[in-house]
Image 1 (cartoon, rainbow, N blue to C red):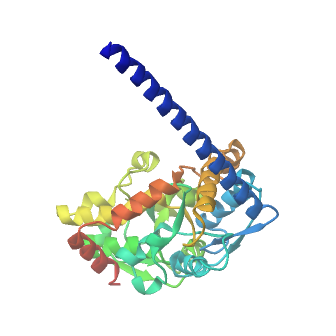
Image 2 (cartoon, rainbow, N blue to C red):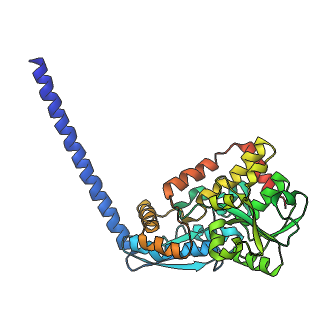
Image 3 (cartoon, rainbow, N blue to C red):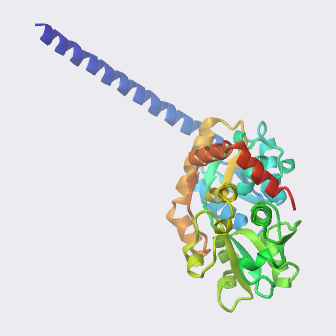
Length: 356
């Protein structure tokens, strides 16, 4: 009898639990539907702004506009996404602009550099007028292998030569500033940095005119998009070294070495790896703090959907743009992890990036 009673009790409890789960699931679905409805009402008929933190024609501009053309198709309310350029301080100017709109406008995004998310940690903190960890990170459109490209008439014909021959490198901020400084101050490369260019495109033009001898910290895929002929055998330019943790197979085939393999100590290698970690999220998109969570969630979902959209992928292929999306949740986790790096390593990296 006791067993029968217990069996009846257990079945009754199971039915009650199942019923409760069904009610909760229904409530959750209704809450999601309501949130989607509210998001759709907010964005319907609205023009969202996408502020691109570099000048026209560069890699960040290409990716920003590519996403802008497709993102609205996947957002509730199907808003129009209007891109514009706001170059300066390696992307920090655009991020600061969007950050300042926290309490004013929930329909503005920024497309910036990974360096702009890390300057407060390992870069020039004077450029940062915001808290990167408070930003609503939407995701990243791509990962990259950074490369140092130089003119073939430079005295340094290989990366080994840079330890005895001076190389004049142009920089526009962000990784184009930080990565050559890491080569100089961590590895001891003889690099003279010429800063002040508005974007990577301007440095490329300066290289072609002979004003500077090279450009470092630029993405391989971005360079292939803008200057594909630079990597051909008859080009006046050559790839000098890969600035990355994970190398590019095509550059490996060309015999282009990785900078981290020139590290003299384990500490130097770890410092370089900290600098290069940002290459895992080279095209980050973000919104200001204070944007309602349901809108952030909707934009994050739409961002990933857009970057898996066959129409976007076909367009990216025509533009020679690699797409390797990272979700907002993963980007947020990686950024928090980097900000938890041991202080001794961070100090080593900061010193290397603050001395020109």
